[in-house]
Image (cartoon, rainbow, N blue to C red; front, side, top):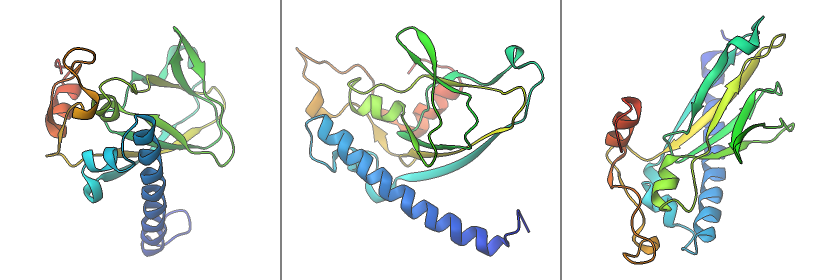
Length: 191
């Protein structure tokens, strides 16, 4: 048993949560597509349509007696398309804005959404991946439940042709499979 639930109960809850997260993802991708002046299904289909993958990661940051000496996670952008994040209400997430780190407020019941690298590539930089980091807390445990929305590993991702024009808006990113993108990012190779 885990926190009073049997594995079967956890599986059922997780499957239902996944269905709801994917519905929310569809709506966000529709709105982002429309924000680019594209058809509502453009980003979703460019990311693999019904084959889009959702991966959940539970982050646990125990209290740290000297939080000024440690980072929970170093500054980065997420290599996926979107990240949907549910924090436990303990502050610690910061985003880079206008040359400064800005604390993100934890609103009860809110799901935080980060645009990731794959949306940045598809939009040819019209949307940018959110540079963020996490800090630890001196007295309280911080947790977050992150769902990373990504294309299948073999999906080829590049700037959408509708957003590229050789004169006004040339491609800013190369086209490659998501697997190659991941490999290059993890190994800190040029994209």
